[in-house]
Image 1 (cartoon, rainbow, N blue to C red):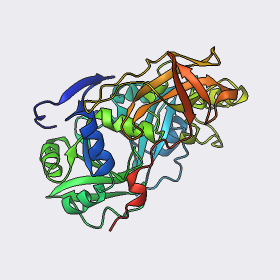
Image 2 (cartoon, one colour; image 1 turned 60 degrees about the vertical axis):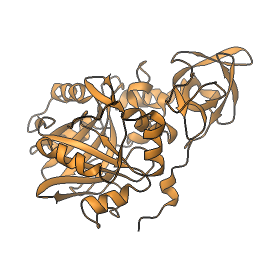
Image 3 (cartoon, rainbow, N blue to C red; image 1 turned 180 degrees about the vertical axis):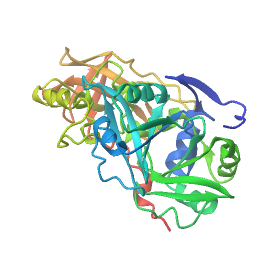
Image 4 (cartoon, helix red, strand yellow; image 1 turned 90 degrees about the vertical axis):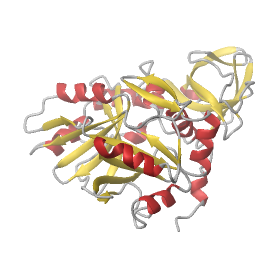
Length: 357
């Protein structure tokens, strides 16, 4: 999308090479939580669903109810397989002739293959990722960036609104959405025009990488499927029930999800702990996925994912434990360190107290 500045750290996430950090993780994170950050979201695949049966097809492959999703709205949904396993978490953007599905980072090819494998008479499934890309803006003052960069009327659109607009003669699809609890916006732009828009955005906001984005998502308990479902955990196990509509008549994977509600099983809950480490570079000593969680010396679960949270000033992560222990305020241990379970959000976004003016 652009010529990355010196010091940018890249990494492989599923099928995509993405910028993980532009500065230190602390610097990227502070821009997001305190000011405004611009994100290269080109690793999010864009798949268009059109045709006479587009809505019926989407109703079947998406776990949320999209029957009445209009062209001025968007929403998040899970996509499941027949066994109820998570294929991806997507942003669904309503269009007059169908909808666009935005994949999670690096998951576009997997999502496309899943959709193409479904019966789809009367439906056209088109990968638009080579033509269109996504730039994100998030932060307590991201609304000001949008107003200065594009249109002062856009920042105050209701959450999950979508409009067609333009910037310097370039047609944009603009969505008020977001992943971190801060004010969030997405600009879907032609690939050829993205470098120029990216450069213009940098005049008003600081670039931030995927590491800061995923840390902020964890702090408000926004699921990151590649971390949370990597061991085959299902929707109920990871606590992503809000990303499906169980009262829908049918969707792929519904029967498996219904069966998972019947058992107690394991559940996922947040924790913070006294692990030592943490610096301005983002280095920290945190437990590895799979580390054993104990209560009174007895194993009760495992670590799913953990990082150092600058917002909390401590280790923050997710554990998967016996269902009857999945409650906030429990004192447990991991690798000899004391932890306590939490209720979400674990960090209060600054945007919750900053008005759009």
